[in-house]
Image (cartoon, rainbow, N blue to C red; front, side):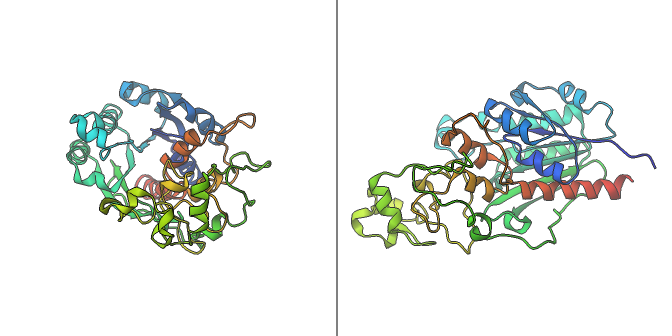
Length: 346
């Protein structure tokens, strides 16, 4: 039996979380596209793939077909970064917030890959653009599966939930294959062994293991915080004015510590800041470091985000980490696609 050549392309590839997971599952990824130039170094350093700095809106099917040339089975993947819930987008009152997902569909129709994978926020299913996406894929002849998934069931130690869609020209695909190995799902199992840090300090061994500074007031606040607790337990003198208002009382996890033996919260682009969510270290008086955030996103401990000669910038690397598809979820997507191809095409 002739072995079939399988090639994937990663749209909106970011720092390479999805590509890395697909490759761990045994799928070749020819290239990743992203408009963010900061993604180039981590994407190419950690993956056997080419990074192409481009706006997906400007791509055509011909661009993808060149990368697919010689392939028997073509896969198109991506996580279109929709921003449907920002105040700015709502005030703007236009469809620009959906243009990237529509570009994804357009590229699918122009290049006609055999299999498509799309990952996004669960709330996307409520919006008209998602229904358009489904109808477009159906018209092209794809069998479609989609579901909101709890990422912890696939080895991601977070309360993160995501929408995953799979579509195939070979017939019904999905659901995602769950791993059978013992999963390390607690904060303790993932980051307890890292070098202790103080707020504002960094490791001399790993530059990415760096903790943001804390103001004197926030240092008092984190010292008064219990793992898994909230600011509601603080002395009134420490409570922020916004939380004293009725509208702020529901944000209990802000200025919170993680708990050692629980899942971490969803890691976001602001995960390095104590005041941005439950991002306080369970024990040490600081927010989690960039490396700890990356590990909780299931990046390997040696995943390179910057050159060794560069100084890490929390805003940039935090964005790369928070926006990434968790590698363990990506690996589950890859395994599901690979098994689908095996039973459908061989």
